[in-house]
Image (cartoon, rainbow, N blue to C red; front, side, top):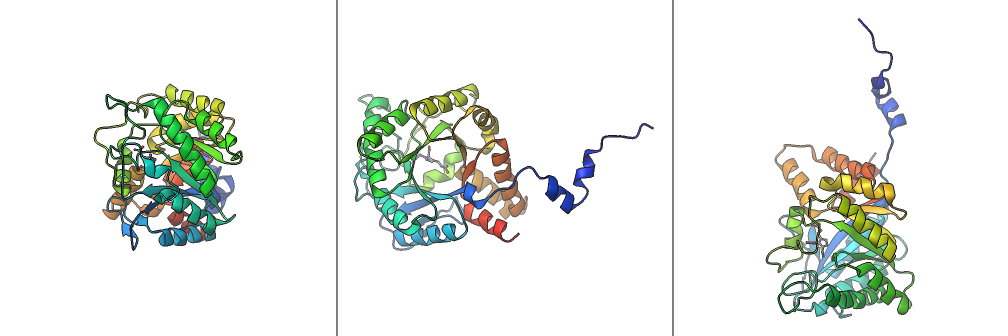
Length: 326
Ligand code: PBG
């Protein structure tokens, strides 16, 4: 019998040996915690499709930020849930609007401990639930939306957002936001481009989290899940337009796109483990079908391994605590 000379198992023989040859370790600074802040709440409210995640009051948001900072988490991404909506999403650009008020409070709480990031999109603020304004035929009007985004970027920067998450998938949105920010003295505001953002069923629980008004879908602006090459195209375009960071979203079903973008990008590449990815793991674990701790770690490690420098994840607090407990 020919006995093997090359034995990869040699490096797996003990925990100490595996520990020595491990290629990647996640640091809490590479995690970003998404937070939902809802107008008019008197106490935090559970989101049924995201067990363990709440819609926050300003005060409970501040407590989460303090905890995230204490755990060494890199940043928080804020989403606003307004009480009133209209066709133009005016709440998004109102300095008294819930997201903008939340940004200011978050910036005050965070200081220099972590970065305050804000979602820049109109979907939470429009009564039709689309990410942009509509034209006379009810289609999302790209260029009319761009001027709303430019205004929103300036307000968010003024309120203290350090990283602006451009999640609306309008063509030209990075260039327009950059120009508006620079013109108003916000050269330091960082643009995070949700570059390769796919029209995904895995955003399901997020719709509950932000009380989405959407009828129909976002397929005329978010990408077709079948398209890999186009993911890289979108990322390269955003880098050309001045994106400081590019992102792939969702993460786990798009690791190929993430690897492509990571191989070509000259700016940091992030990924968003979205609401449905979180809910899937939590639900299976609640049934006892998978081990929660291991599934959480494996999913985040896989996203990092595929090329993400940082990961937005609803598991950020939980995973940072697990890392600390080692
Ligand atoms: C748009 C936005 C969405 C998510 C983040 N930003 C919703 C969408 O595009 O439909 C989804 C995030 C998640 O599912 O966790 N404001």
